[in-house]
Image 1 (cartoon, helix red, strand yellow):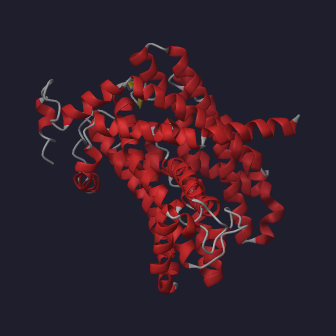
Image 2 (cartoon, one colour):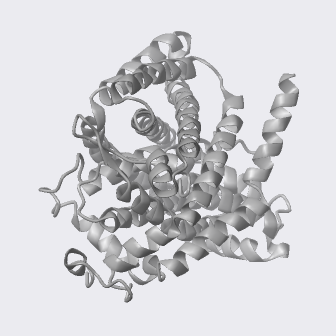
Length: 463
């Protein structure tokens, strides 16, 4: 029975993350790009500049909301910049070859406009709760935008399952890496898991503002720390940088080169695994990893949507450093374990670097868990009373503990199924509501000649 269930899960995953699905993702990305008049391409440098300028100046500090735009982005990044940026990238390289990195970049390019569009819907249809906080997500924009209440609630239930399952996986990663760094602690995993629960609980029980403050400090630190360590590995292997980059591009588009020195990869494999992992890592289209933007203090949905573009860009930077560190090491990709290959690459150069990547992995996993804690509770509060929804945080902490003490490989595949289902239903909803997305975006940037532009938006037109 169990084997049959596992087989069904594998079949569903092959379809959800297979070629047909990737074509659909590409179609949605192109459609949204055309409908928003290529805004993430034409305004890319302006968007990056504007989002980073908010580090020093929160222009909407006096606007209604719970978090600054930057804090909301970091809470969202806490959910996506975790293990996907390490294990996800390694998995793409092992399964699709070096050329998968190019297709991850392409997926990121498409993912920018999808996440941008998601955030517009989230802010456009968000609600203020009785306790003064803002929530947003599919339950609200499906109900308000399409009048399909039960469809939105179904998406939320799937999202909650994703959050619980992912929290178990990431907690297992946290405890496993602690015991790898300190093998003597392998006999006290129950205590380690309990300590992890305490560390997570202190943050998520404090609500969205505490999560925002922690994410604002933790995400930049751990990302910069990891990039510095990865840069050291790349610099040490500097002679391999040019050959690695050449191999990345040649194996992405040439059947002959794709098989050179690796396990006979083909262009289709590079494309399939690169795009699939690229979307998985950025969280684009998978509204689970975007609803954290709902509490942002903004006057217009697009003011927050541009942070989605920056978010995908930052995740892609981290992913690129992971890929280059692996490829410049010269390690044979065939037969490697995605969960350990990065640590092996760093550790082979120096035990200190091995410890450093272990610490970075723990921080990545921890940040993902606190992000998921926020997402699950707030989404549950969009379909049931907010006070009753608080029970989620305690169920969540139980899942964190169970994940820390058990090996949960099968849950990876099941999580992919839930996440894939959320993504496809959400993308269809986005297509149905695309007129709302296009109107909000084009009005903001002054591109909607038929509807004009509000005075408030005109100030942002020439940024």
